Length: 334
Image (cartoon, rainbow, N blue to C red):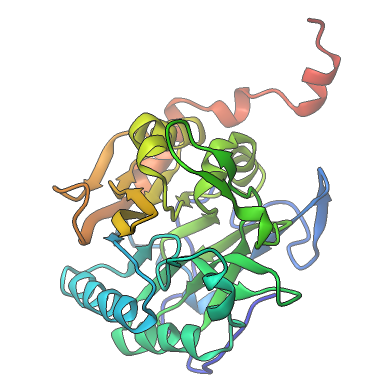
């Protein structure tokens, strides 16, 4: 569900731009079932949609090295928000685990809170006071019991409302070659909802980190829910990042003809954990249009979401018309 903690309304115009149709041909107030997952499109208030006269909108992607200190991480996020606002960005995307990275297994459970708890309320206030939208990937949301949490991607608007949430579906249970073993499912509940949300930056598709390796999620967001911008907050390991990070992100952008905004953790968080970094913004043609000069630095990169480019790429290479339905592949002979 969506939460609304502040009643102030946005004053942006009511119309949208860059969508082949304003909404998919589904009942968007209902939850539909597809392949055992529920698919939800959470539309914002009509007055928060894009201006029909807008051609582009500026966004920013953050890079940071979170630690096991909530206050220190919030201070870093606050500084990066100020930088983004000064650069004219209307949306700033933070990486997975932006608010906390545990030094020991189990510590994340100790800080997990509901979305109306004081940690997330700080970030809602930060968005409202700075008049900027925030994408907060990988928040430790309290789970259904004390032994579990949800890895939750939270989108907050510029008046401090939580507009949408997505719980990470694909959990990172992996033995990293040459590295340590991870078992995210031992303390995290997997999500079941595929989430898209309307915003002044186009229709956003919400994902988290390991989701990136599962293209069917991104295909669903693009072709059934007409997403224009894919958000991929992450904390890729150094080993997997070196091998696959940019390749996977550019592939998702190319095959969906969407912008991809991928905020990443960077560098050593503690003695046991290191992240690859290299936060990126990629356009629908697969070109990197935003990148920090230093893969491991803390900072932001800026780019403009160009709605005419999305339309141009999609019209000149109309893969939405050419792709075969699922039933075709079921009946095709091998």
